[in-house]
Image 1 (cartoon, helix red, strand yellow):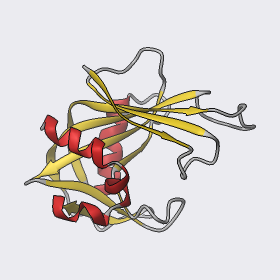
Image 2 (cartoon, helix red, strand yellow):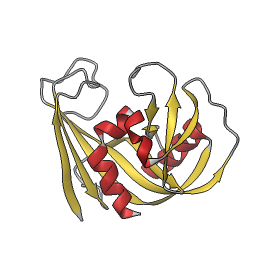
Image 3 (tube, rainbow, N blue to C red):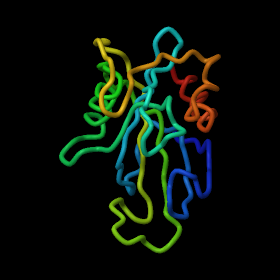
Length: 171
């Protein structure tokens, strides 16, 4: 199953000319190299988000948990690690929910450290193993369980509304 749900051009959080395509999918295309992973985690109808401290994305305060895949780490290992580091919630991967292709459309930038021209971000649907006490770290104030009626408080939820709605259908 693969369904294109979003195409965007020159997204503001990427400093190079770009096109992003986001898919609902249960498989990863073989020709793409995943560089980052993100966790969709729900509890009692609420969506787990990390309450980021101001930093490289000062407008994305309530954000989906996730980040880069470390060398030698599988995407699934990175996803569970990132979810725990950013929220204090231990998760188990249930399935791949989708992915985004990010294609840089300008000549390869000097010192560009990602696959060129196209890299891939993976999104996993996860289940909770347990929640530990968590008061944040250097990157985050802590976790937030965001109810659907409050999704408009998160720039990530606003910008990814269609994707989030499609993932909720998978639950």
